[in-house]
Amino acid sequence: MLEPPLGGGQWEPMDSQPRARLTPIHARRSEARMARSKRANAQGENHVPYSSRPPACLSALGSRSAGQRVLRVLKWLLIFGLVTAVILAGIGYFAYRNTAYFPVFQCKLMKKLLDQSDRSGAHVDQATTWSFYFEGERFFEGTRSLFTAQGVEKPVLNAYRMLARMGDVRLAADSSHAWPLGRLDDGEAGMPEEIDALATFNGRDCVTVLVWRHADDQYLADTRETAVTLRIEHLPFVGNRVHLRHWRIDVRHSNSHTAWLTQGGPQDPSDAQLHAIKDRQGLELLEPEREEAIRDGSLVLRVPFPLPSVSLIEIRPLS
Image 1 (cartoon, rainbow, N blue to C red):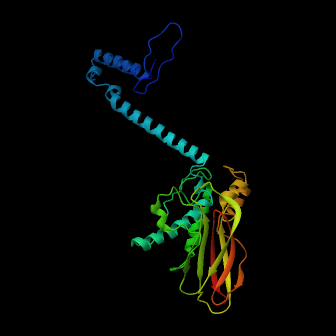
Image 2: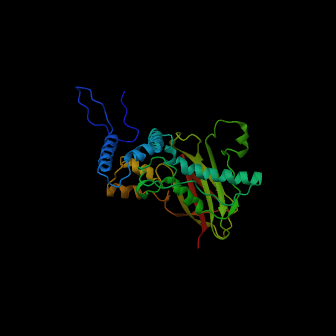
Image 3: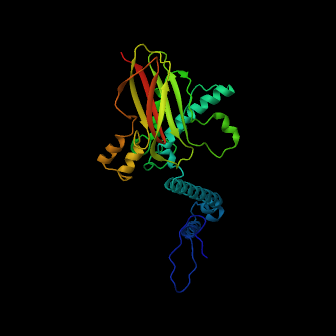
């Protein structure tokens, strides 16, 4: 088997008959330089004999060859990594980063962290997200990012918009279908489906309640809605009516990924398609703003939840 020259030269063309000796081009050029040097010496010119100088192509041969091999290995490792990431994203290993599962999980995780902080004494003061922006990536490849191609906001960004609207004072919130934090040490394979809530007060005029329906399995979804009864007690407002705003993240709301799929999942969307996708990327209201009556400082709501989904309900007194 014939191999190319280590120095990076090129082989001369070889005829099928007769078999000729293959000579690297850089070696042929070295022979030509040697011949010119010999002619110069024969004519008495002030010229350093070629034989006394180490050929540059030979002195650098070892380092160039090793460097090229390292670069070649790194190149193939990079290609392998990129291809693997694309394949895994394509078959769904990282698809959860595009769907409603991920923002709902982020809201659920926030309460678990706060509960763990209260139990362990490790004070949680701030939270962030380990996210990046990948220039030149395709639409919804499943990367760890808040944006996909052409600056389209992913659904997970809306989870942080919900959390940003919550107050500074945490209120007690209990659920009959919550997964208690104490079960972390039970050795279960995963968390079952749960419905839970996180509630806050801004200290002035707004109570916010974050409610979710979530399952640990990223592939588990249920478009059939489960009716959840919310009872908010001891509202610190004067009067018997309040103003409600209700935001939602699920497969049909606040979801640019669903909008992208509805357009056929284009990797080169038209202006109209891109506009339709971006039109659904922000945090959306589930229903029009409305007023509700309260009795003895309590508000009772009945809210439907598909799986996965999360709602942010903002309660303010009527001005």
